[in-house]
Length: 258
Ligand code: HXC
Image 1 (cartoon, rainbow, N blue to C red):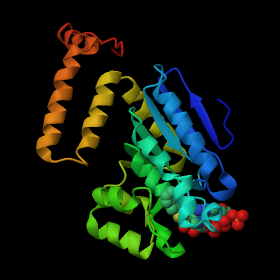
Image 2: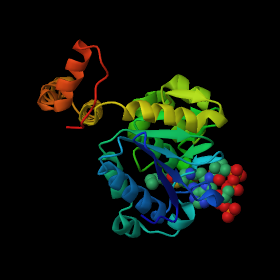
Image 3: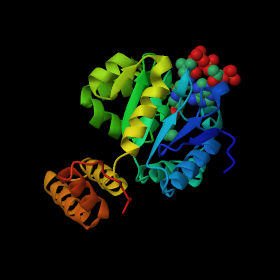
Image 4: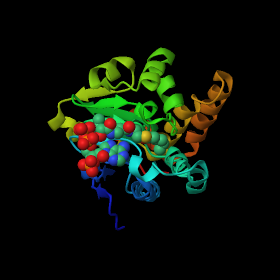
């Protein structure tokens, strides 16, 4: 597919990389970027040769937020009619694992986009923040909900109410980031993780992701039921047979993805 604001690459290891590519505005997420990002992710989600996707930016910015210039003169009705945020729901519905590889600014919608991903790998220069308060609004794409669940009430309050940024180290300590690596190692590290995940049985990957996400919007009782049903359901896959017999026969499994 032909994209103007993102670069999409795939490889034989079974993962794809989607790079946000509006460097002149620190990858500000305008409507076109979000359209293209959602289309790319949905298409990769349907592609059997791809098991996992990386979303990344450049050295200076993962993304500095929604495009302020595009929103500055919008009315509430414009925002409602544009309904940009429904695109974020579509990213939430992506079934394959998403890895955010973050260097530089991940602010506002940029920070929210990292939190829509399932694993966040940061470079030492990564900076996270929800500075919407400084421009008269507040987070709108999950910042108050996912950030609070990730870092707890008090840190989330401080970040959202002051608009202050946190550096990679603090984000890591707070549980927002899986690991921190030197800038030049960022993509390599994300690719290693993506290749490892892509080497696992795809149906089990999807069900495991779905089950973990369930923990965010249900009671423990319902979540455990959901997990158990997915666990039992995996016994109808050929990959369960293959995985368990390969273990018993002391050989490497060959996944079929069914
Ligand atoms: C549009 C942006 C932008 C943004 C940066 N730019 N962020 N344009 N929307 N979110 C543009 C600048 O206008 C400038 O363009 C160029 O990128 C470089 O930015 P500078 O400000 O010159 O860079 P620097 O001095 O290094 O400062 C970096 C920065 C600052 C601290 C990240 O750019 C900044 O504060 N950006 C806004 C961050 C923010 O408030 N994000 C939240 C947005 S609201 P020119 O043409 O001047 O060179 C949001 C709501 C999400 O995300 C809700 C759901 C979608």
